[in-house]
Structures are given as C-alpha cells and as structure tokens.
Image 1: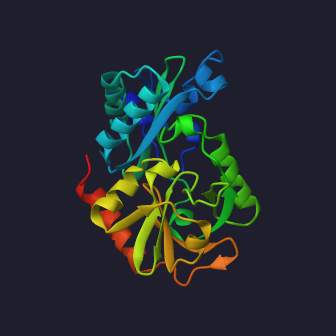
Image 2 (image 1 turned 45 degrees about the horizontal axis):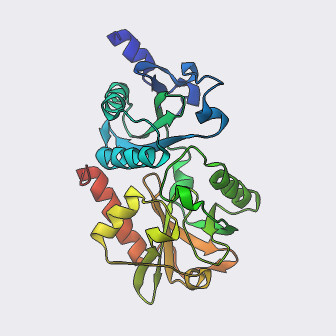
Length: 281
C-alpha cells in the first residue's frame, strides 16, 4: 500500500467514527467499514470464534505476546485453526497506521477462517477511570468455555446493559451459589482486613493479562469468595487494560468506605509503569 494510502487510513482517535478506523482483513489493510464477513460464517451466525485485544500506546503494543499466547490457547480449546505467523503479520501491518495516544488492537478469528484485526478507540475514558457503582448480576459460566475468549459475549454485554439501565456504571458477575466472579470485561479486586484479594481462576473467570500484572507486582490472595465478603470490603477496583484500576464506589446498595483507596492507587501505579516501560512482552 502506498504512503498516500497509509496517510488516508490514519484517524483522529477523538473524532473518527468506528467505520473509519483501520482494519486488516485476511492480510489486506482497509477501513473497518469495508471489512466484510460472509453471512455463511459460523463466527457470525453462532458466535463460533475467538478474539483477544491489547493496548497500543503511541504505536507500542503492551503485552502483545501474552495476549497472542492467550488467543492461541483459546483457539486450541475451541479446536479453531490458528496461524500465528499470519496474525502477527496482520498486526504489524495494522500498527503502521496506528495513531498516537492510547488505542486498542482487537484480533478476531472466525470458524469460517477469517482473520480480522482492527484498531479501536478506548471510548469514554473518563467513564472508565472515575469511581463506579456495580450492579450484582447472577451469571453461571459455561464450564466447557472456562478461560476461553470466544465471540459468544452476549451474556456479558447483557449484564452491562442491565447495569446501565438500572442506573449503575457496570455489572458484577456473581454465580448462582453466591460466588463472586468478575466484571463482564474486567477482573475485580478488593481489600478485606487489609489484604488484597481476587477470585481464583478455578471459579470460572478469564485469565486476564492485567490481572496477571497486578498479581506479579502486589501481594494478592486468590480464592473462592462470597458476595457478602466483597460488599464488606474496605476498598475495591475493576482491572483491565482500558480501565487500569478503576475504583469501585458501591456494590449494589452498599457504598464502600473509600474510592479510590491506597491499594487501588498502588495498582494504578503498577499498571501505568508496566505499560510505560513495556514490562510485559
């Protein structure tokens, strides 16, 4: 693709419509609005496929290798073909038109054999960092898909919509037996008796890369925790690449004592340093 073509595909993250953002479909660089998936693809019809996403700051990917490792594991669990060299080439091509600042690369692989890599904005960044109120939503994950980032995210998105409709900022997924899991697209941490805690992977949550960074840097207890344990927390936060460590102001009708608290601020510092210094490949 010519230099002029690359220039035309560059976007202003603050004003570009979703369809104007660059994408790479099966190796070809284009606008997202031009990237088409056939109506016969089971990735579209049945949500049969895998995806992953990672932050890019000023053209530098954060934890790209770790996210691609997880995508490879997701594809293996789904028995979905995955050509990592082709996907890596698609990402390299997409990064040639990445704008400055913070953006996201999303990689989507479908059962029909399509590879789609696209650049996305972070959305309302203010909403992702200010203290948030969580609505508890009952959610029992499918055991066969535990830890797999599939395209079947309808339940997660419905949980978020229910929270927003009820006047909350996000949902907190809680199993029907009362075990706390995570947010629809983020991990959850809280402080109880001065100790930082988070659900163990065995509860059915995703092996979040952001979660891993926090756990590698801070002392964190993992386990199976009840909803009553979490609402009694001294402080809490949601964690993802976009949110970093977003303070939780309330869970249901229970306001937490402080938002953000001292350990939330430490987690924020840990994530900012990891991203700025590229501490995770």
